[in-house]
Amino acid sequence: MENDTYNSLTLQLEGLRITKINKYPIFIFLLLAYVFIFMANMGIVLLIWTDRSLHQPMYLLFCNLSINDVIGNSLLVPRVLADILVPPSERFIHYYECVMQAFTTHMFSTNAHTVLMTMAFDRYVAICNPLRYSTIMNDKMVIKLTVSAWGVAFVLVGILLGLTIRLNRCRTMIMNPYCDNASLFKLSCDSVFINNVYGLTFTVVLLSSSIGSIVLTYSKITAACLTGKSKSLNSKALRTCSTHLCLYLIMLVSGMILISLHRFPQYAEYRKISAILFNVVPGSLNPVIYGLQSQEINKCLSNIFHLRKVKPTI
Image (cartoon, rainbow, N blue to C red):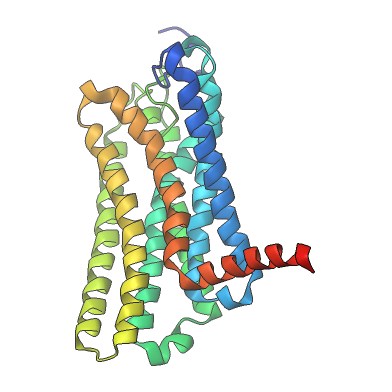
């Protein structure tokens, strides 16, 4: 074993295997997708924070999802874009940068689950306990839900990466377009039994709690709508819940595809593409779906554009 390989701080990213013909179309697509993700999500966040009519728990909680999409993609996509423009033999990354990238990757995906769980709770209270909604979902509760969503994700991912960075490394090749936990502990020649056990437990607990909470809350929401006599309330519940459920399904399906492709080494290139799309697709669709379905956001946007059209004529 060579000394420069053992615990080396310089790692190499395999990245995407693309031809010279495909390099620039893929680069332009990812660049435009990233710009759209950044502009759309930050636009939604600024709109919610500046418009008092949108200072409602539903929209404030959604801000967490937009911020998560911006941070997750900002720390991953630019690096992938830079690697596309250089030959595979020159795609180097420092070990500490790789660890930070892996932390961001898992924080992004875990936080998406926890934030959507808090949004499901908000919809449950709004529909099943409408008279107590303002009492339950006060400012303190919104802050508690936000801190819990980010805090739980931080602790779970922190332990995941903590178990990995304790390992000695005898390899330097990251077999992925960006760093993640699995890519990092595969660099080690030590026993990774604990990493596999915790990683499996982490995934099972996160998915079971996430899916379980969504199924439970939507079962109670469905029951409340079926027994309720207010058509307007049922219509509003259907609109807001369908939006939330659509966001959840997009995130869940994207993650399931990525997890499934890990089981088939012969589809390594499809897995790499899926890993990138797992970040890009939900981040692009979330603000569009939420913005189009929300009457309040549509109203605010129409007022802004109407004022811009009116000002030159005054």
